[in-house]
Picture (cartoon, rainbow, N blue to C red):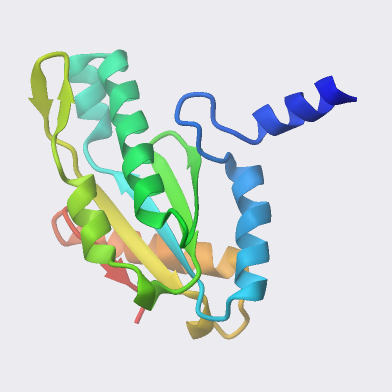
Amino acid sequence: MIILARRLASARRDPLTGLHTRAGWTTRAEDLIRRHPRAAVVLVDLDHFKTLNDTHGHAAGDAALVETADRLRAWCVHKGTAGRLGGDEFVAVVRDLAAVDLDALTAALHRPLHYDGMSLPLAASVGACPVAELPVPALSDALAAADAAMYAAKGRGRRGSRTTR
């Protein structure tokens, strides 16, 4: 039974970043949304990740993913929970968007990555959706709205954030 519990727990964590996987994050996010009416979903997508990976190698790409995860985790610690949806796409849910600084997250995600004696540029687009702004406070709808906001941020030059308001 203990081995099964350990395997289940490890399956809910991304082995590279240590963040929750989609399944593990979804369970936590739905619970947080139920308990906190001012909750918000935040979607993060790395910009130019393929170029970084192709230019500097997969180890540099992995380092960028780990660093992004660390920065996202640090931003939402004690205020929510973060996860990795896959590839270079990350997600967080926070109890109250007004209580966190979305611009600080964006700034953190744009700091260079120091890797193997080099300073590699990092960039990310961020979209957020306060769940209270939805007709029904459903996680799937919040993710879709945060995704739309994130793509709107990408359209503004791939270096910002946008909230659905």
